[in-house]
Structures are given as structure tokens and as C-alpha cells.
Amino acid sequence: MKISTSIALLCIASAASAQTQSKNITVFKDINDANYYPAPAGSSFLVAGGSDNCANASTADAISGAGTFAVTNVGATNGAPDAVGCVNTQLDVWFFWSSPVAGTVTVALCGGATADTVLTVWNDGAPSGSCPTTSVVCNDDFCGLQSSVTFSASAFTNYFFQIGAFGAATTYSGTFTVNVAPPPPPVLNDDCSTPIAISGPGVYPFNNSGATTGTQGQTEPSCLSFGSTAIFKDAWWTYNPTVTGTVTFSTCSQVTPGTGDTRIAAYAGIGCPTAAAIGCNDDNAACTAQNLSSLLTVSVTCGVPITMQLGSFAAAVSLLGTFTVTETGSACSTPPVAYCFGDGTGTACPCGNAGAAGNGCASSVNPNGGNLSSSGVASISADTLILLGSGMASSSVLYFQGTSQISTVFGDGLRCAGGTVIRLGTKTNVAGASQYPELGDLSVSVRGSNVAGNVRNYQAWYRNAAAFCTASTFNLTNGLNLTWAP
Image (cartoon, rainbow, N blue to C red; front, side, top):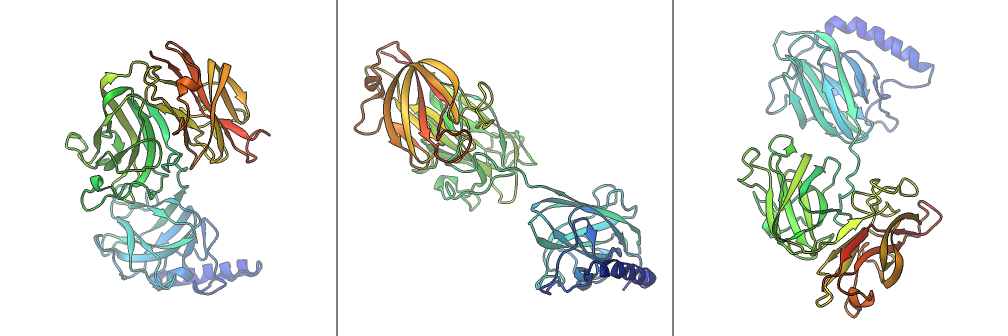
């Protein structure tokens, strides 16, 4: 009980009671009462500056959402608990805060107090509203001698704020602020079934703040380091090499925060792994400025794509930055060239349904859009070319060849191959992916009646029956252009 503020507390309580009686709302409720409700966002049941005893905070000083709240430790005593690893909090008061959404929360006394403050956030006690036992984060000095903390809150979850002073005799009255940032948007390539297609050397963006930790690629023996094989908050890319030789993926000095502690794995083929990783790296000594960053080099062959998985070493760490791709080896003689993207760089998709870079227009099942790539060699004498479609609906798909490049709206996507058209074959996508040819099919050169020197264009046209964009029930991948060698 704050002796010096008891009269003020009674006055505020009386005013609050009078105000709420007209609305048939009971201000003071037990947190374990079935009729308990949190305070409206940005408000408190009784803005009295904090409870001297944590056991009273859930009824006397319950607050919710973002806002500016009064705090005073005048008349407060030293309570328990104190967070392990933090400085002792002197003359502390308590608030019981309800998070209305999931997001990043910042609690700060910057500008709201002039004394030397200490601030700790605690998880709710058991039962809810009872004094806490597990701290989340604490801070002494952040903005001068005042405190500020940032933590990730879960929606509709309660927390305790413990606010006090560094000095044993320091008292103050002021305010603190609570800011709630919404969660980041989902990562488009969060799942191995929807990788982003990239090709050739370059610098590519990376942000896993909205990613989740998938089930694929989490138990690779080659990833074992510091007792763990996990790649947390992982994202996925499909890479089409432009050489036969090696490709290197690196996050050295390119990722924040701090040490840039990443982990990279690579797999043969497109999409979700079907075999063990062909390589994995956690920390690489070559990353001298950020020695917890990753650098992975694997062997590649022209026309044979691989899939790369990139994420965090630690479960709760989000990373932002770029990764670099470099290659060494013999250049592919006539590498296929992807074109006609539904990513906003050329002809607009019919409903503003742009896909990810390098893909077709977005569909009802994949916001990244479908992708067409290839493996093997387009050679008349030794044709090993395979057209690889991914990111499509799990439905029927037609692979076709055209003699000219076009880019026109067609169904929910863009048609990229025109002129004289040959239907190569119809397949059924499994997990959004398929290929032509399969065992028993004619080769692309034979089915397409090709001869050396032919320049041909390829695309995959797939069924997407859901009501999504236009009245049509189909969509298409990007186009692929290549020249047939002897």
C-alpha cells in the first residue's frame, strides 16, 4: 500500500467506479473469475501508478494494448521477486498487461521519467494473475539512466511489468509507454514446396523475421554443429547454375543483427528434399567479420538445379540482410533463359496477382506463382533436357513448345510461348510439381520435331479451378527460351 497516495487512490477508484456503474461494468474483477475481461487497449482499470505488491496488480493495475501509462513509486517498498541476471529493482511497482495481438512490444520510460529506473517484463504467474516467477527481459539503462525493453508477445496473453528504481532511496512519478508492432508478413518461400527460383551469380535479399521453422531439412547429419542440426526460421530457394563446377552461397558480413548466426544447406533437385543434403555449413572461419555467418560451396552441373535452405542457428533470432552467390567452372554453352515473368517487371498479371521474382502470376494455391526451369542438355544428338514445373496447383498441367516469344494475358496468368505450338504432354502435378519427359515419354527434341539451331520457347499451362482472379480456371508458369545444340 502506498501510504502517501492512499487518498488519491481512493478518489480515483471512486471516480472510476462511478463512471463504470453507468455502463454496467465492474471495474475490479478477479483474473480467475469467469467474467474477467482485460482493460480496453491503451487503458487501465485503475490508473494509479502501479501496485506495490505483484499479487494486486491484476485487479488494481491491469492495462492492455499500446498507450502511455502513469507510474509512481512514491511510497513503494522493495518487493520480490527480482529477475535473475538483472540489477536489483528498488522501490518497485507492478502492472498486469494484456497483449491484444501477437507482435513485437517495446516498453519504455524514455522521456517519461527523469530518475534512474529499472524495468523487467515477466510471464504471467500460475494461476493467471498471481505473482510471476519467470522473467522475459529486463533493462537498467537504455536512454540515459532510463529503461526500455523489447520482447515478442503472444496474442491474448498476459504479462507483468515491474518498474522501479536503481537507487535504494530513489522515488519518482512519471509515465511509461507501450508500443506494439504488428508481426511481419509471412515469408513467401517459407516452405520447401514454394521456393523462390534464382539463377546465376548475384546478391539476393534475405529476411526470415516472418518465417516459421519447417519440418524438412531439420535432421541432416552434415548440419550437426554445437549439438544441433536444426535450421530455424528457414526459407528456401531453387538455384539454376550457369556453370559446371562449383557454386558458393555466403552470408558473410551481410546479415544483421550482431554475429549474423546463420546456417545453410543445399539439396539436389527442386523443392522439398528427397535425399540427404549435398552440403551444409553453420559457421565458416572465412567470414572474418562475422565468424558465425555461413559459407557453403557445392558442386553443380549445367542444367541441373539445386535447392538451398537458409535460416537461423538460434530458434528465436530473426535475421535481415542478403546472401551472395558466386560460381566457378566452365560456362554452360547455351544456358536456357527464363522470360515473361508475372512478377510485375513486364506485362501486368490480369488481377494484379503478381508472383515472386522469376515466376508466373500468383495462383489461388501459391502467391509466388508457378515456375518453369530445366535440367539436362538441349542437344539433338544427346538430348537429356527435362522441363521442370513447380509451385503449381496439384492438378493437370500441359507442357508445350512455341516458335515465338509473346507476353499476353491469358486466364489468370500470362501466355509466353506462341507461334507454331506443339503440345509436348499432359502430366499430373504432385505437391505442385511435375516434369516432362518422364520414363516412357518421347524426348523434348523428338516430340517437338527439333533440329540443331532451333530456338524454341517452353511453358507449363496448369489447371487452377478455384475462383481466384478471372472467370478462367487455369494459370501458367514463366516461359523458358533455349537453343538446340547439335
